[in-house]
Image 1 (cartoon, rainbow, N blue to C red):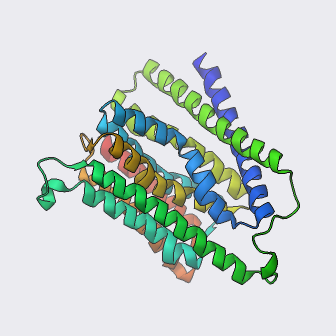
Image 2: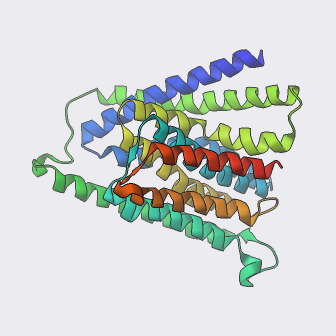
Image 3: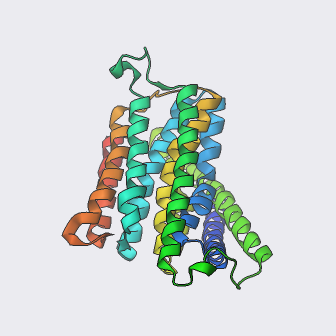
Length: 322
């Protein structure tokens, strides 16, 4: 039964990713919104719903290490696995905006997370924790960053379009109600399919005698990131590389600033079993993504870099379960 549910969950994920990608692309075309922005906002926040639910509920229940560990594991998975797989399929081009603004934002959010969880090191407290004030600061920063990015991308789109007077005006295409149905239906398929896949895979792993720690490290973090994986791969296959990249960058920013910010505002979060090594790996993922833009004088995440990302993730998992 679990195997059938696993297959059903996977089918919902793939179908949801297909609908979400087509609906988001249609929305971008209709309102002349850059696909990267759609990926950064609607797709990123939508596919981060599983992480949001897990972390917020965990914070409310007092399980701080699960709330933080879910975000940490998901951000590492997003860069090293999702972008790794996408780059193996096709090199991911990075724009000047990605290099000057978007990737530095992810890196800054990772540094902020490291600082907010270094109370003892900085002499600010007896325990490393993300307090309510820290959470509110994160939420305000998230709103400010998204607003700034949308305005910056909007200016770039207008400058790059000859018909500047027509920029921002709705264009003909799919009916608006159909676009909404596709996006909402796609997100629903991703979220419910991801939950079904995660529960089934966990049950199968337990039946095979796999330890709880391995399940938590691999299946929980990877399972909540399945929507990002599916939507990014489908977007790339359909030639929407900007949307795939925006999805991962947007998800990582949302995971730290929005999800942990909201979780910490509800209930202060202590590190628990999450170590500084885990947080440094999150920062490493952002730094390596930035460095990949300057290798071989090509502004892209190339196939060999995608392979390297996957190797680093495998080594990290090996370190955790050693």
